[in-house]
Amino acid sequence: QVQLVESGGGLVQAGGSLRLSCAASGSIFSINTLGWYRQAPGKQRELVAVISSGDRIEYADSVLGRFTISRDNAKNTVYLQMNILKSEDTAVYYCNARSRYGHVFWGQGTQVTVSP
Image 1 (tube, rainbow, N blue to C red):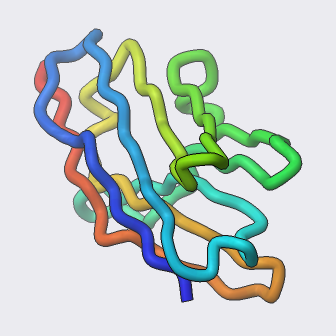
Image 2: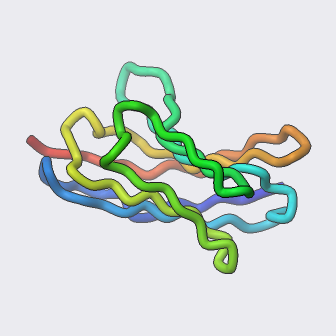
């Protein structure tokens, strides 16, 4: 089992920045990828960014150039730096971990609200 705890969400004005953190614990040796997803009201959960154990990174087109994902293996933490935030970035952001055995784990989510 892997436990994920997110932090760093909040309210910010459009054009501002936030940094999300996700601390992983438990069977962290099994983690292959860490990532961030988001879900806006009335919409499906979507990929924001993901980083593999080999530091391969993938971003959603909508955040490319504005968001940066990174990981600190010593702290078992993944970060999402969000810049130039837009109102359409408003959502609950979820941390995600995928193990090399195919298991998927989710954090509890953190709310990000961008005001116009």
